[in-house]
Structures are given as structure tokens and as C-alpha cells.
Image 1: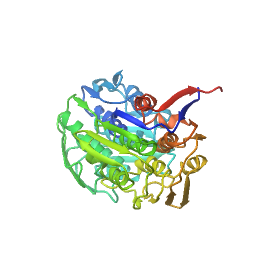
Image 2: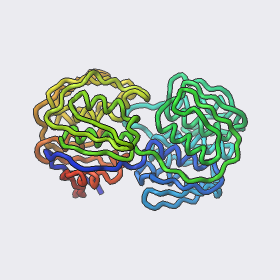
Image 3: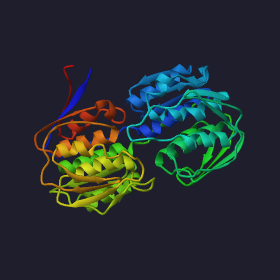
Image 4: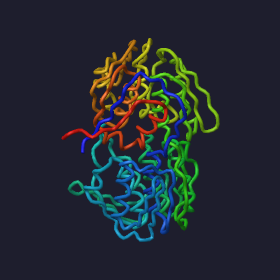
Length: 420
């Protein structure tokens, strides 16, 4: 049944919101649970649609899965398959993360190319190159990937830092014999989270968070308990929402350092921020100004996933901000929808110029991708009148209890089913 989120904007936000676990940590951690022939309990793992797709894959592979809210138990001692059918692979783009874990645990893997992505092509060439470098034989046959072979550690130099390829290589290397050194590895906090979970299972991994990760493979693994880190992009979305709508909020359950570049842009635009433990406080009064050019970049640069909600926040204000998107080809799909709400944004290739306007107005808009949907929510909270946001399948991939959390901050938000 198709649904919409209805938002009556113009209400300042106030209060505290706790962010849920990071989707981009939970997915590789669930895949990593395959490596240990035992039971792993993963806490703060939100029941998002992408997480549910991962659980379907685990069940298909023979694992026993129990889910209670945001606590998931995976018993991989019952693993009995190494193939993932096309239907399950197409449910989410990041399903390729299972390649390294399945191959490492069983010595073989068969899966289709993962589903498409709204943000443009995301080639898996680096994933396959890493598997081949470790000794895996990879054949592409009619849209299927057939992988086999024992894995042996070695040095792998990535031609560019890739989060997914770094994680896949880590998972495969844990099961390989010998030592693997990943050079030019991605440095995102979610990779550190994966490293910490792998250590909980008994693996020897060090260096995550730097450009060199060292894995001593072949260690005996066992189940364990772990708590997923807070979602820094969800936190950035709530901060952008308060910046746009005005008011004063506290966002808890995050590592403030993970949001340094986001907070710097908000502060430059006129917000007042302070940090206290795992809490970020933000106060926004009056129209936002502009900020220096925002260039998206791999961590520790400005995160591409935070670009759409920050752009939406700066759409209402007095300043001009230049965004340059260096990661994805189709990251500005939300711009046309923001324009329906009165935003003045001009796009040329990878550059978007945001000219703040005195007011936005409510409109019927549709999310085209996950973070673009978040941008529409941010703009709707700042707009005059009511907005109707559809395309919620995208939002549900990365935001759990979004409407309830916003209502807790004083927003007038409701989800309703639409007549078919």
C-alpha cells in the first residue's frame, strides 16, 4: 500500500532525539556474522528495509535468525548454502558485501550482480579485484558471479578508497591463510565498527580508520555480542532539520567527531553548536547564511550522504552556498523537488549553487533516493503550509521511526496510506 508523509512546516524544533544504529555499519556486520560458526547477538541494529533484506539472505543461506526490535541474533553454525538468488540480491545494492564472507566461510560463492542504484553506477570492480588478489577464482557467467578457491593473504593496493571493497576484502581476508595488508583503504567510521565486531569474533584486524588495514587471517572464530555505532548520517539529518526549522535540539547516541565537517558547515551558516559526550547540541535562530564551498569527499571529508539534507537546510536563508559532488553522478535528483517548494538551486554537472530564499512553501514531492528523501523532509519542516512526501520506500531503507522522532521534537508529522 502506497503511503505518504504529511508535514505541516514552520514549527521550531525542541528536545532530544537519540539516533538509531548505523545502517552502513549494520549491513557489513550482519555479513561478517557468517564467518563465525556460532551465535552472534547484534544490538542497536535497526529494522530497516535494507537490514531486513540482509536477514532474508542469511536465512536463505541456512542461518538461524531471531529479531526483537533492534536486537538481532544470528546463528551461523547452521550455514548450509553458498548461493544467493537474484531476487534477494536485487533487494539492495550493498548485497555484494556477502561475497567475501560466503567465500571465506565455505570456499565458494555464487550470486548475481547486485541490484541497481538510484545514484548511478557503482561498479564492483574493486571488490572482485580484491577477491582475485587473495586467490579467489571469479567467473562471470550470464549475470552470475561464480567464485571458488582457497584464499591466501597478500598485499592489496586499492586504486581508489572504496568503503564496500575495503569491507569485502576485510571479510575475505579474515578467513584467508596468512597476513593481508590493505593499502589505500577507505577510512570511514563504519569500517572501524566492522573491525571491532570482527575482533569480538576472535579475528585479528588492526588499522581500520587509517589507509592501511592489516588482517592476520585463519584465526579460530566464535560468536559474540556487539553494539552497532550510532548513525552519523541520521544525526546529520536531524541537525539539518533543526537548522532549517529553527529551535534548539540535542542529538544523542553519536560520536561528534564523525560529524566534524557537517557541524562546521552548520556553524558557518549561523547555527550555534556544542558537544557533550555523545551528544551534539544545536541552536538555530533567524535565517541561515551561506557557507564556504562544500566539496563531498571520502572520510574524513564532507560525507556525500549528508549533502542533500544540508542543501535543503541552506535553501531557506540569506546566503549563497556552492556544492560540488565528487562521489556520485546522480546526487542532485532532489533539486527539482526542492524547486517545487520554492528553492532557488542551479545545477551544472557536479556543481549546485544554492541561493537562499526568504521562505519555502509546502508542496507534493516525491523522494527519488534515500538521502534525497531526507532532504525533502528537512525542507518540509522549514516550509510554510503542508507538504506531502511520497517515495517512502527510499526513506525506509535508512530511517527508522522517523516520524515518531520528529514528533518528539515538536514537528507536526504523520504517515498516511494513500488510496490506490
